[in-house]
Length: 171
Image (tube, rainbow, N blue to C red; front, side):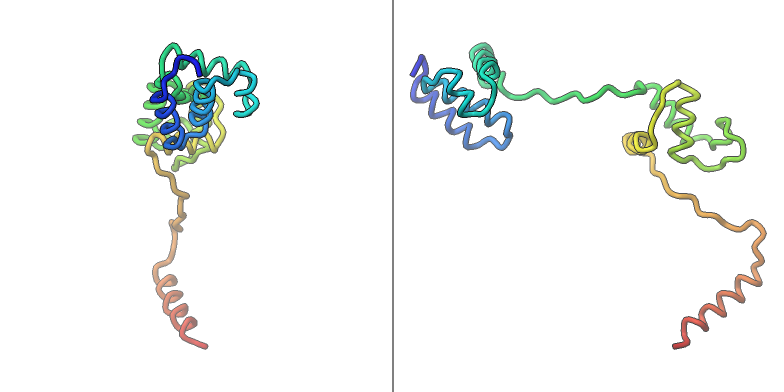
């Protein structure tokens, strides 16, 4: 049973029951089996991980205790733009139209136009979905533009609305 007391084993069993994290559960299970005297090969077979992985879990536990077994938060893939470049994008979209930013004749920002602006400004390619994720991260909302006829005849529109109401009432 090694150098571990019954209290140590009892604590490990309690932690094993309480954890909901599958990675941490596997680590605790490996340590519990180690405390009970199983060798690394048998532990690896029971827990279904590589023998070297079991050895790493045990080494982490011996060096840092239970805290060393807790998985670190994954940092994820690094962003393409740094914080300052993202802020510049935010300010540009918030304060300028695409026409002001060098896109002749375009009045509304779209993800595609923002991708092109980022490429022109920073030389970084973004997919449209990647840009939409960045909009979300920067708290920028996006909507599809609606079109209004510039030369619409108000009298004809009023007549249409009246006719439309009559059509809705007929069976």
